[in-house]
Amino acid sequence: MNTFLGHLKDWSNANQGLLSLFAVIIALIGIIPFKDIDFSTATSVFQACIALLTYPLQIPIYVLLVIVFAASLFAFYIARRRPKSVPSAGKVLIGSWRNDWGTPPGGGFEIAEITAEGKYLVNGRHAFDIHDFSYDQASHQIRFIKVGVGNDYRRLTNILSVESDQLLVGNELNYPIRYSKVG
Image (tube, rainbow, N blue to C red):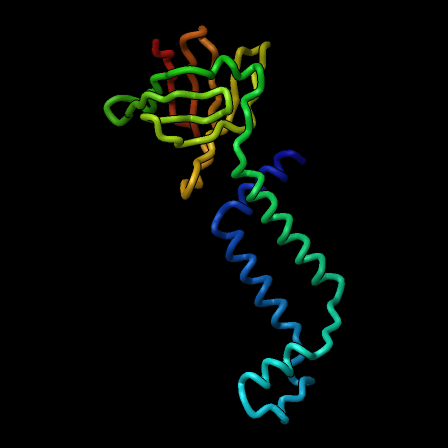
C-alpha cells in the first residue's frame, strides 16, 4: 500500500497531474446541460453568461468525489514541497560531503552540505530537501530521497551502505554514488 501511495504522490507532482486536473475541469463543464438553458432572451454575451450562471445545476455525487480526489492530489503536492527535518538517526548525514557520482570518465562530483533541517546545499545554494530518511542498523544501510526545490521536480532515491562515519557508498537512481566527509 505504501508503494501505491508513493507512486500516486509522484504522479500528482508530475505535469500529468496538472493535465489531469484540466481534464477533470473539462469533464465538469461537459455535464452542464446547455440544451436545457434558455439563451433565447439573451441579447449579449454578458446576458448569456448570466443565464448560464443562474441555471440550477444538480451535481451528481461522483462529480463531488472527483473534486475531492483533485483536492487530495493538490494536498500531496503541497506536502511534498514542505521541508522535513532529518530524524535523529539522520545525524550521520549532517555536515559537508564530497559527492562523487558515476564512474570515471563520465562521472562528476560536487561539494554538498546537509543541514539538520534536511536541506542539501551545493555551493551554498539550496538544491534539494532530504525526505523519507531511514537507517537499517542490521544492514548498515541508509535510504533517503533528495527532492528538488523550486522548479526542480527531481526525486533522487539514494540507497547507501555506511562504510564508516566518513564514507557512504551506494546508488542514486541505480547510478554509483559515493559520499566522503569533508573536514
